[in-house]
Image 1 (cartoon, rainbow, N blue to C red):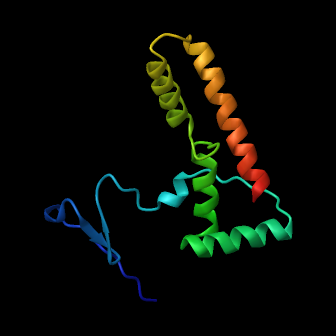
Image 2 (tube, helix red, strand yellow):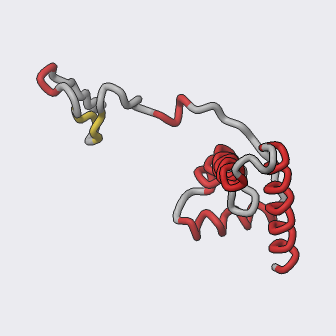
Length: 122
């Protein structure tokens, strides 16, 4: 029985090699073991769509699902941060003629209508 043991020397320090891979003290040896696993059920058509989108994006299906689950929601191309910046810009443009509440209501209405129109036309 052949057993191969790799011993790291103290002089190797940062960026040492173990089994041909380069590791730093801050990088876990197996990062996938630190993640929690969840399971989802998908219809075959949905699974095929995810496979196709992952291949088109040049990533794995797992990474595609992870990215989508952790990304900020968007409406009409705006995430919450961009939406609030748009409201602040519109309020500044109005120079106090309308309250921020009224400006935000108007901005939300316009964005919703634009999004609805774009969705219905495609």
